[in-house]
Amino acid sequence: MIKRCFGVGLAILTLSAPALAEMPHQWQCTWTGTWGVQGEEAQEEIKIAGFMFAADGGWVIRANAEERAGSSHLRGACGEGDCWFEQKFPNPAAGLTYFSMKSKEAAYTKDPRVITYTGTWGDAEDASTHKGTIQFSSACKQLKLARPDDIDQLMKKQLGWDDESY
Image (cartoon, rainbow, N blue to C red; front, side, top):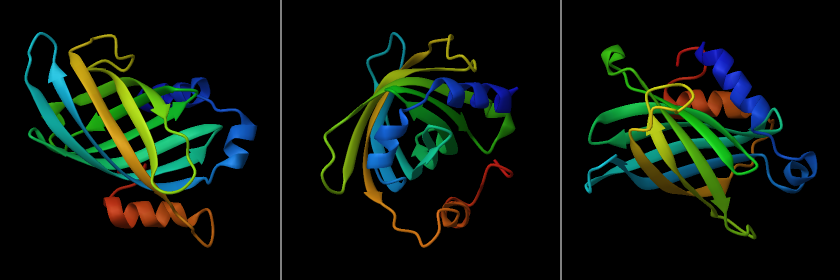
């Protein structure tokens, strides 16, 4: 079900081919931000590190996150300002968390590439169970890899997981 939802998310979230042709296709990023529970004023910090790369007409993101609740893995996709993320904690009892977000990018002329994200989080794949808000911004540096496929090995080495072991 998750793979089908993720595939649908990628199909829906697309960028135009000309926009991708003008932009480098592989980035290493850090994201910092906060999240909160609906109805509560307190905000918790979240720090994320990983990769963003062009795929299937949009952007795919793979990263690790650290917050008060612990360490987790993130995977998601963005395109035309819409983003969807899935967060997985090592403890299966924690379940999955989903983010539905909007992204806004500052004009890119040189590294770092800055993108801000705002949205909601919940425990349903369609993010309909709004449990709170989340916002973060990225600082991304262009990767210059010898071959485009090198991103897969680099991600597995630095993140400690890939789509097969997620």
